[in-house]
Amino acid sequence: METYDIVIVGGGIAGASLGARLVPDARILIIEAEDLCGRHATGRSAAFWQASLGGDTPERRLTLASRPFFDGRWPDSEAPLLRTRGAIHLVRAGLVDVDGVSDLGGIYEPAYLDRPQLERVIPGLREQWVGAWYEGTCADIEVAAFHNACLSAIRRGGGIVRTDAELLSARESNGAWRIETSAGEVRAPVLVNAAGAWAEQVATRAGVTGLGLVPKRRTVVQLRIGRTGLRDLPFVTDSHESFYFKGEADNSVWVCPLDETPVEPCDAAPEEIDVATAIDRFEKAVDWPVEAVECKWAGLRTFAPDRRMKFGFAPASPRFFWCAGQGGMGIQTAPAASLLCASLIRGDELPSELDGIDPAAFAPAHN
Image 1: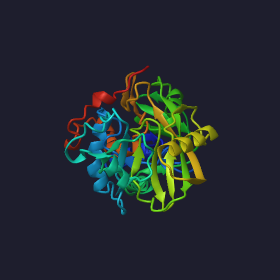
Image 2 (image 1 turned 30 degrees about the horizontal axis):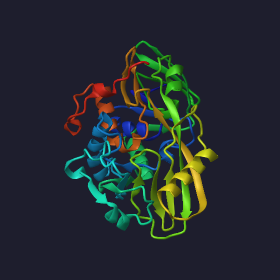
Image 3 (image 1 turned 90 degrees about the vertical axis):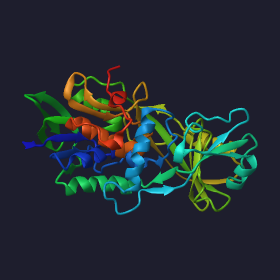
Image 4 (image 1 turned 60 degrees about the horizontal axis):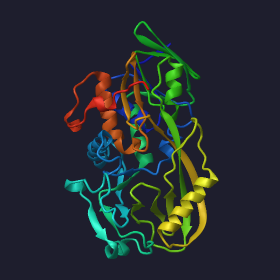
């Protein structure tokens, strides 16, 4: 039987970034049920690094702590990992202060744009928008480059990434887990649950009490628009209430209706009602003509009941580690979250890069 120090279930960005942190000091195996790592949430994410996302929460502190790692191309990415885009948070009359945006300070402090200033950035906005907060540090994350860099770091360090290896069962005995997978049986003292939408299922198969995590479907639609010059359009949102859109190509945009539909873990596909909702909300925000739906897709984002990320050993199973419940912030927080999780698994003090972050804010608790 193969033996490792740590087995990580899930090869998406959560498991891959954690593996990259752990591999210098441990024998690591990642097991991935699909034939390709990152096929679901990671591979379908329209990911941004956005300081305001999540408001004043512990997750924001992970976001801010992650920025230097992205800027430094961690872990050894050949390509830059961020592309500055900027974000526009539209506001209506009487609702100028936006939770999570107007309270940012320092280098992340946004600038307020009145309607004439806003028109120069986003011409053709409907009359309900009186202004906006401009968040200049918002950036696209090059998800594929980041994910591939993490997987490459694992392999360079001697770790194993095994696809088509679904966890079938796991039982703890004599200080180690015996883990049966569809690719054979392995053994390790520590089992990490980084299975995203399947995290509850993994816990059940390991005999561990779940946390009540729920996958929720999110839809993105690419629209061809009857105007040009859209590629570098900022990320535009009504303060994350009902939509966002951003430029994709010269005459196309990505639009999301911010849907959160609870579903079973699955290969998510967009529903026509959500596609129609996305188009309707876009057309009510701007007067740009929609010419065609070029493509559409959906992914799963997984939330705990309290919407907090869950990092830490299970209360009743101290060799079972939760790395789950990242919701819609998993990629932008992954550099710092993986450092936090690696420190907890090793039993180390938190490094200075995580100053101000309290592990207790992410501790798993049964619901």
